[in-house]
Image (cartoon, rainbow, N blue to C red; front, side):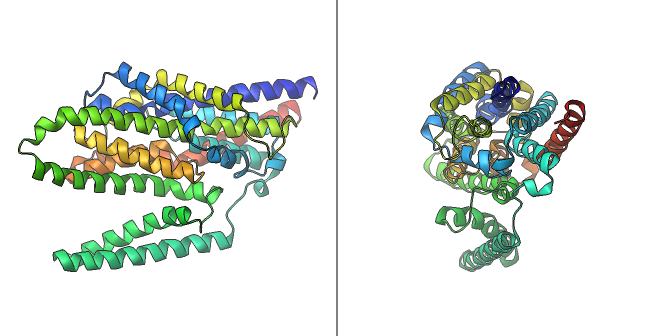
Length: 399
C-alpha cells in the first residue's frame, strides 16, 4: 500500500467511529426518553445505565447486520477507501445537521444513503444492489397474503365479539400486511440482507413498534384494571420495570446500531486488501465500534430526548415500560435477521403505539409528522450529500 492509501484507510476508520459516536448521540433518546419523561431515573443515571448496556450489545448479538452494511447495499468490488470515506462523510454530516435541529433522524438510513450516493457517483446506478422485479413481486405477494389472512382473522373476531365488521376488516388487513414481511423473514422465505429489506422496514419497523406496543399496553391496562383496585399505586413498580425495559432496549440498540461502523470498517479493510472478504470481523473492530457508540450515548442529544420523551405523547410509567420492552423485542428480531433497521423508527413507533391506547387525541401529530418527514427524506438527502462531496472531490483531486 502507498502512503495515500494508508492515510485514507486510517481516516476512513476514524470517520466510521465518528459516525458511530454521532449515532450514539442521536439514539440516546431511544433508550432513555421514556424513563426521563416519567422521572423513573434522572437524565444522567439513565444515560449511564443505557451506555453500559449499549456497550454490551455488540457482544450479545450476532454480527449479521455488519455483513449487510459491508456487502448488501453497494457492490463490494467497487469499495475503495475513497468511496467509503466520502459515503461516511455524507452520512455523518446529515446526522449532525438533524441532531442539532433536535430531529430524531435514522443514523442507519443516513449511512445507507451515504453509501448509495457515493456508489452512484463513483460507478453509476448499477453500483447499487437495487431490488429485482422478482423480489418486488414476491414482496407484494407476502403483503397481500398477510392482509388477506389478517382480514379473515379480524372478521372472525368481529363476529365473536359483535364489533363493527368494517373497522375490524380494515384494521386486520393493515396489521396482517405489516406483519407478513417479518414473519416471512423469520420463516426464512424472504431474504433479509439486501437494500429492499432496508427500504421496506422504513415503513414496517415503526408500524411493528406501533402494533406491538399498542397490543402490549392494551393487555397490560386490562390486567391492571382487573387485578388492582388502586392502579396509580403501581406506578413505583412500573418505574422500576421501566428501568429494566430501558436497559434492554439500550442493549438491542448497541446490538444493531453499533454494527454500522463495524460493517464500514470491515469493508474498508477488505478494499485495502488487509483482510479477505470471507474473514470474520476482527475483535478490535467490534470493541472500538462499541466504545464509539457508547461514548456518543454518554453525551446524548438532550434536545432529541425531550422531543421523543414528551413531544409525542404524555407517558405514564406503565406505558414507558411497554414502549421500551416492545421496542427492544422488535430490535432483537431485526438484529437476528441481519436487517440494519432504524432504532429511532422502532422506538418512535412504540411510543406512538402505547400513546394511542388513550385514543388518537393522545398523540401530538405535529411532532409525529415532523419525525415522519425526516424518516422519509433521510436516505435520499444523505445520498445527495455524499454524491455532491464525491463529485466535487473527484474534480478537485482528479480520482
